[in-house]
Each structure stands twice: as structure tokens, then as C-alpha cells.
Image (cartoon, rainbow, N blue to C red; front, side, top):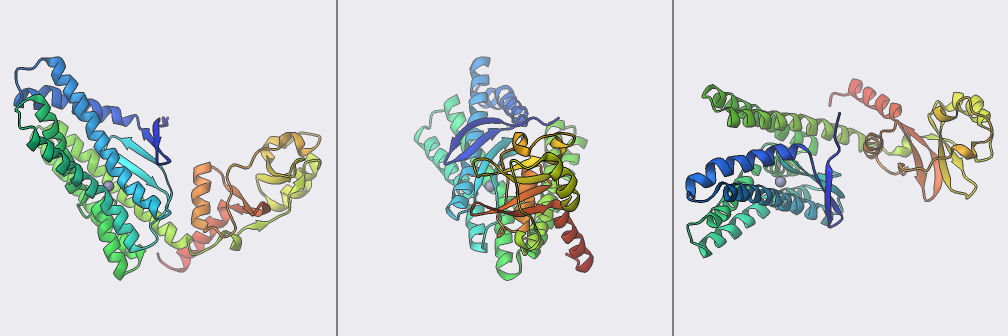
Length: 363
Ligand SMILES: [Zn+2]
């Protein structure tokens, strides 16, 4: 079972969400700081203070991560690339940037914005440390935030896709080669970096350090997997972006709301083999009927009209169509242009194309 993340708030039109896995890392960081870091460097405080500062540090760490992700997102939005949400989870945060950058320069600027924010925060806390040279637990907090922001900045600059450094390297390679080759090289580096972290994790575990070891192995597995998935997605995007929906859609005319149900079932469905059929409502708007819902029903279609929530334009790429299908959990999408219903694009058509492409040329 998959839990959907907790919605926190919206900023610049971006929804900020908290994944349940975040609580694990929040507790782990709070525990480590409250039991080891603060008592070791700043003795003579009560346990409550240690735990309070532990929790505040963990929350401010994630506020820093959020600012890092927001920086990527704002640069992407500036280039007209939609960003719907930022998810905070066990390994930090991830901005859901909906499309690939349009050019190497855009990719470079989007990627570098995050580490630049982390370094700026690091410098900000460094200045606070210098302005507040008192050796107390508050000084410990700003010291901690300074270190973690520098660490976030440097870690993300490692040239292993999909880390920011990998994206920066990809943008540089993209200038010389094509995007697909650049993604292949950088995601291979990403995969090996993931293996390297797993290896380090095993070394930790052999030494008896189970927390660091487990952490390193999980992070390594996550990066390896993310590198593979990103490459697969780039490959799909590369192939499917070349084609438009209009080249592959099935054109069909909508029925009217007062058409009989059995006419659709007996006559149209066997011909078109689709699950959703377009219908013009009494109000002149377009609706769909779910054919599985109306089987064995009688009367007219009017009672079974459903709003169209997901659709594509004939000029959208097949990649966009596939992404919308996945998001809406549908195998067919209505094709609508300027309030006119043109037809249906089916997942099977896109899959057939991909199969033919894979047979024809190796990608
Ligand atoms: Zn980043």
C-alpha cells in the first residue's frame, strides 16, 4: 500500500509535500543530535534542551533542503518549465520538474541554482557564527546549519546523474553531443557512484557501524535506481518527442447525449475498440462515457456522462501524451483542440510504435 504524501503549503504556485519516510530521517537526525552531538560539544544542558535543539536543527536542515529545491524550481519556472510540487522525503527533497530543459544553458542554470543556494546559506550561517562567537548551544545550532548546507552543496556537485553535478556535466556534454548520449554517460556515472556508496556502506557494516553503513547502502541503492529510471525516461522522451499525437490518434465523431446506449455498445464500440467514448452533452460541452459502466444498461447516454479531466492537444508530443496517461491512470486520452473534439489516442498505439522503433534501430 502506498500512502500519498502530506500536503504542507503552497509557495510560488508549487505544492510542498512531506512524505511519510521523512519522519524516519527526522527522528534519526533529532536522536543523533540530542544524544551525541549537542551533549558532546555543549555539556551542562538538560536532556529537554538537547532534544529541543535536535528537533529544531532537523527542521531547519529540511528548511535548507527546501530552499535548495525551490531554487531549482524557480529557475525552471522562469524558463517556462512547469514545477507542480516539491516532495521532502527520507533522502532530502526532490522538485518535480515536469519537462526536460529546452537547451544546455537552461539545464546548467536550473542545476546549479540548488548548490548555489546551499553555499549561500552556508555563508549566511558562517557570518552568523562569526557575529555570535559565544560557546553555547545556540552557537552549536548555527555551526551545524553552516556545515550541513556546505555538505549539501558539495555532495550535490558530485557529477553523478541525477545529482545536480551530474546534470551540470550533462549540460556540458549536451553542448557537444546530443541529449541522449549525454544522459547515457552521466547516468552511467550515477550508477557507479551508487555502487560506490553501497561498497562504502558494506565497509562500515564490517567495522560494526550499522547506522552509517545502512544509510550509505540505502542511499547508494536509491541513486543507482534513480540513474537507471532517469535514463529510461530520457530514452522514451528522446524517441517519443519526435512524434505528435495527430500522427497516431484515431479520429472519431462524438455521439449526442440522447443517443441510445445500445447503439454505442453494438455499433461503435466493436468498430473502435475503445473504453471511453466522447459525447456532446445537453449544454453543448464534451463529456466521455465509460463503456464498461454502461454495458447491459438501457436508455440514452445522458445519465452516464463524465467530465473530461485529462486530454491532449493534437500538437502535443507522444511523450507528453504518455506522461498524462500515466498520471491519470488511463490507457486512452481524448484529443481536443480549441474546444473541438478530434479523436482518441491510445496507449497501445504508442507501445506499438516503441516496439517497432526498438526492432528497427537500437536506441
Ligand atoms: Zn539540487
